[in-house]
Image (cartoon, rainbow, N blue to C red):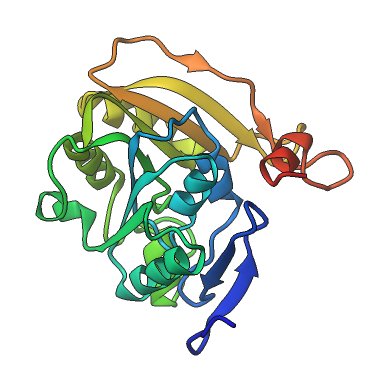
Length: 243
């Protein structure tokens, strides 16, 4: 039986028989993490970094895809502790390392150009826009109070190898800002995929991949549709969950 601290719960990740300790007052993972972890190809020997790893869900999902060299950086000490315990709970200590620290000061944490691929599921909202949660953990996860889009890209530019890849999920409405900022930090946008909750709805999210030092030219993939007409997960999403 897993020992849980006050306010925590144990959820079934539904992938690779993994379990996940979560704490609702700090932020629980959503399908956004599943979308990002299944975006783009991976190789077992690639070194992969997750900026703002939260519960450690993205490294865990990538480990289920066969990746064996994974690092997650997390600023919130409560979440960093949960992430470490999730790694141990799922028997991934030989594959995943969790570093507690601020990726806005990433040179203090890891060496430059250390990673083949860097992932980020950052706070989506600018600090002054939208509903701001009074709960500190949720506020940190959803709004750019401790890290902006520019902070994310600076950290990626430092940590990813030349010709390495950067993958991120973000709001579709910020697409232009994202691409302009990526190009400014020499992370050339190369792949774009829009995410729709249903086929007849406008895209709310996007997945984007950039290459450090890449040449101009972007591939736009077919959209991801999360729910089918009956309101169940689409075939694509069910396949990710092994169903």
